[in-house]
Length: 134
Image 1: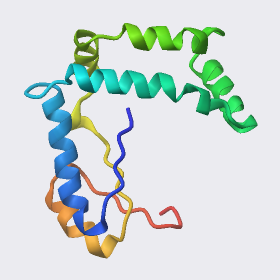
Image 2 (image 1 turned 180 degrees about the vertical axis):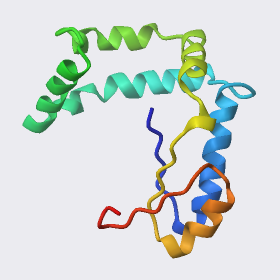
Image 3 (image 1 turned 45 degrees about the horizontal axis):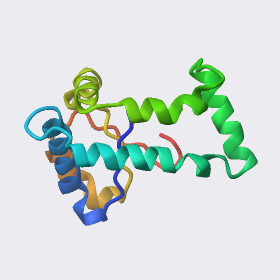
Image 4 (image 1 turned 90 degrees about the vertical axis):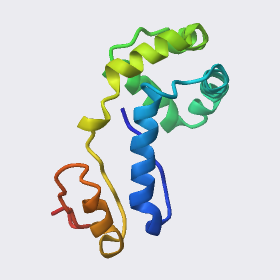
């Protein structure tokens, strides 16, 4: 599971707090709505043709089929599989797959501007990696 949210540097900590809150709420007090599900289904299905506009994109789609051991007709059946999803199924899957307390948060930004506030959130151990990779 990857969740990302480009934000203003000076709002990094607040954005992390909000993101963690949203993820917890979607599991309990504010589950997905029918409208949200419909919009997501439509976006996933209608964006399919754009996934194969370049040779590189076609290669990536083929690599996904191999990497994840998907059937050769996966993308043919994909729209039907997406349409078949219902709120009960996605809520159940969310509870199985989303564990906000076990996330690894990767925060990219101006260290001097965000470090203290991010550390103060106590999301877990903080490891700083420079552009050089250490």
